[in-house]
Amino acid sequence: MKAVILAGGKGTRGKPYTEYFPKAMTPINGKPLIDYIVKYLKSFSFVKEIIIVSDFNGLGGQIKNYYGNQKNITFVQDSQSGTGGDLLHIERKLKDKSEFLLWFVDNLCAVDLKKMKEFFRKKDSSACIVTRTKRKEETGFAIVEDGIIKEFKEKPVMKLQLSECLGIYMLGKDIIKRIKAKQKQKEINLSYDILQQLSKEGKISAYDIGNKEWIDVESPMVLERNEKMVNKIIKQMGL
Image (cartoon, rainbow, N blue to C red; front, side):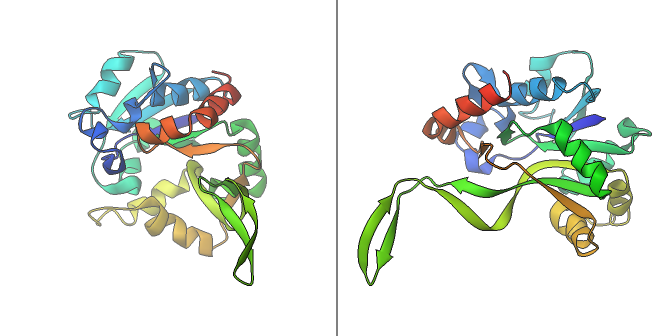
């Protein structure tokens, strides 16, 4: 299986930092964010090649310079045609592979990819998305009865009413065929233009991470505010 890391986002939430380096190069303990993801992917024997998609003509060039000519890492220029459109440009690199992993670079999580792959195949779905139904809140909550606070809950773990979708997917190659059918569009959004319809057909499975931590690395400030959780995730990743 090949793994695709989408690292071409503009990083608008990470400004002003992302005016100087891409989100993928956000430093964590002296190493860039993307390096933790690359090393974690390489720890699974079934991941044979990693394809990094970014704007290598712009700030994304820093990623290419960091890795140089490492074995089993290839680079594809971001096409600026949306998250779905980018996948058309990696079709030749996927070759005859029937499925591939898609990891958005701002996601940090020690998801068990081996179990996810088994779940994906068991469900015989066109796509499998990592989800969660629990979330540790960053603010305090209170139990209120008749306008009176009875108890405080400091940063509790909340049960979500809906499953939250994280940016880690396993996709079948038929996804590419679906994208091709919409290639006349200027931009193709993977979630809204492709996966939405598949969900109505019952062809998307959800792999829940249970109690595992996950963080959206939108900026260095988020990392600093959640330092303990970030270090715990990195430890879970075995890095």
